[in-house]
Image 1 (cartoon, rainbow over the protein chains, first blue to last red):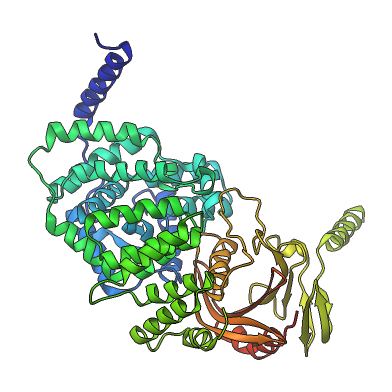
Image 2: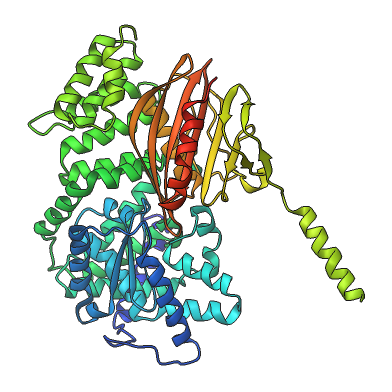
Length: 391
Length: 195
C-alpha cells in the first residue's frame, strides 16, 4: 500500500504537469527589434539602462578576451534566434553563479556560471531562461514597479544593481532581493519559455534539469552553509520543485532531443583555455566545499586532469585541515604527470616539503619548478630557498 | 533669523560629528612593535573611515583613501584575520604563525578580495621576493586590484613574521597618477619598516 504522502506527492506532480502543459503555449510578448513605446516610464528606464551599460562597458571586471566572448555570444545568438540582434553580451569576472538580463537587452554572464555549467547545452539553458525574462518584459515590470514606488535615483540604482548583480556586495545582494525578486509565476514562465527557446535552437532541454541539479548539489556541498552562501539559489528559490516540473515537461514534449557531445567538447575547450583565471578567482572565495564540488564536475567532464589536480592540491593546501597537506601533495604530484606538467604544482610541492622542514626534497621540487618555468615572477623567492642551508 | 540660527547650529554640529583625519608627522612611529619611518607628513584616517581595519591597524593617505592608502597591520596573532567584518558570509581567511611567504601572499590576496567586497574585485599578486626587514627575513610582492566601478589600483605589500605574529604593510594607489605620485615614498616606508 502506498503511503498517503507518496499519493499526495504524485497528485501534486500530476497537477504541476497539467498546469505546465496548459501554460506551455506561452508566446514572447515583444517582437525582435523591440523598442520602448511607453514614453513616460519605459523610455526613461531604457535611458537609465543605457547609462548603466556605458558604465558596464568600462568596468575593470569585464572579460574582453575574444574567444570566450565568441563562445558565449554564439550560444546566446543560437538560443535567441531572431532576437540575437537585440542582445549585447557582457562577461563579468565574478566567481559566483549568475546571469541576468536587463529590459534593454544587456545580458550579463558571470565567469562563476561558466565554471559551473558542464556543456554548451547547460549554458544555453541559462541563456534561454534569461532571454525569456527579457521577451516577457519581466525585468521591465520589476523596474517599473520599483520606479513607481520609490522616487529616489539611489534606490533605483540599487534596484538596477540587484537586477544585474554588478556593484552590489554579496551580503546586500541577498538583503534587497525581496524588493525585486521575480514572482513565482514569472520564474516559471521563464523556465518554460527558456526551455522552448533552447529546444528550438537544437539544444538538449534536459540540460536545464542538469543545471538545477548542479545548483542543488553545490548547496549540499557547501562545507559551512553560513560561510558559503550561494547567489543563484537565493535569487531562484525552489530548485527542487522546478526540477520536477521541467522533468515532467521534457518527458512530455522533448523526448527526441539528445545532448550533442560537440557542445560539451566546446565547453571543456573553453574551460581548459581559461582555467587558471577562472579557478584562481573561485579559490579566492575561500569556499572550499563549493570548489571541491566544482572540481569533481570538471574531472567528470574531461577538463585537463593536470589542471584539475593542481587546483585540487591548491584547495587542500589552502584549506589545511588535518590530512589536507598529504592530499595536496598527492594532487600536485598527479598534476605533474605526462608531458604537460603544471609548473606551479612543482613549486607548491617545494613549499609543502619546506613546511615539513624537508629541505632537500623542497629544493628538488623548487629546481624542477624553475626548470619548467625559468621566467617565473617569484624566481627570487625560490632562489632564496635554494640557497638556504637550514629549513 | 531663527531659521538661520538653526541652520548654523545644525552645520556646526554636523562638522563637530565628522571624524577627523590627524596629521602623521615625519619621523619614526611605533605601532604595536612595528617601527615605521616616514620622510613626509601623512594623514591618519579615523577608524570610522576604515571600519574593516582590525584594532591596532592604521591607514595613512595623502590624497584620500580612495586614491591612495598605506595600510599598516601590526602584530596579527595566530588564528586572526587581517581585517574585521560583521558579516557571517565573508569567510575571512586567518593568519597562521607557520605560514610561508606564498601563503602570506595568498592570505593578503584573499583578504583584499573580501575587503573590497567579494564579486566586485579581482586582486592579482606577483613578483613575490625576499626582503630583509632589519634583522628579520620577510617578503615583498606587487599587487593589482581591479574593482567593478572604480579605478584600477596598483601597489606593493611588505610582510614579516616575528614571535608568531604577522606585521604587514601595503600601499595601494589609483592608477596611473596616484600610484606614480606616492610609490617612491611608499617603498621607502615599506622597505624600511622594522619589528
